[in-house]
Length: 245
Image 1 (cartoon, rainbow, N blue to C red):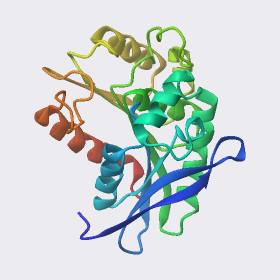
Image 2: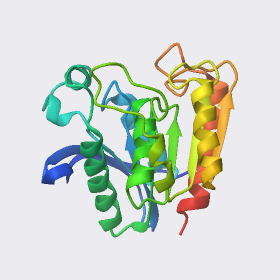
Image 3: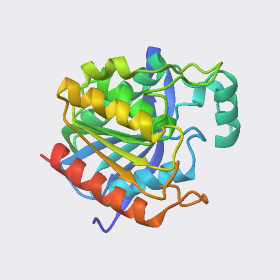
């Protein structure tokens, strides 16, 4: 753990050269530090997201969380921006990949970065973390209960199943899921695991009894302290193994 960190809102270059806001949290010290791109959940670029970034910084990571809903409602509160994004069908996959690429490039350009960058996402961000792992040159990816990697999204959403992209996964993948979740369901998680196994990909999945969707979120009734504590330990072990200098 680091005794101090610094954090601020910055601007990065995202998809199609657009400038978007991002939250950057950094441990104090010269480094070098590995980097983590934090992909926020469907409710948006909010306090739980910045808390996650701060937690990574406190553990010695350069953490950046881009605001994926910015274009849908510039300057709006997270709830309003999330509502605008949902009304527009959600974040398009190509835009997500472009914004994530900008965040990865920003981290790797920092003099304190050791050059290795991972990605983590929760809820819709879990699916998007898997998408980034299949689309960009990152060193590790963590999918926290990401829905619709497998399974058909609701009508009107920009999302689509992306299991076919698993063959492009070039980095190790950690998956953390609740057995009481329906999006993704245990059966969908099993289907994803079977495909990763068939393809010979590097992955590890962990499933938690008594946990449903959003079991990491301390501000919701869905929070499960035991599952979240074990999940965080596995995240830091996984990133430590794959992102260390």
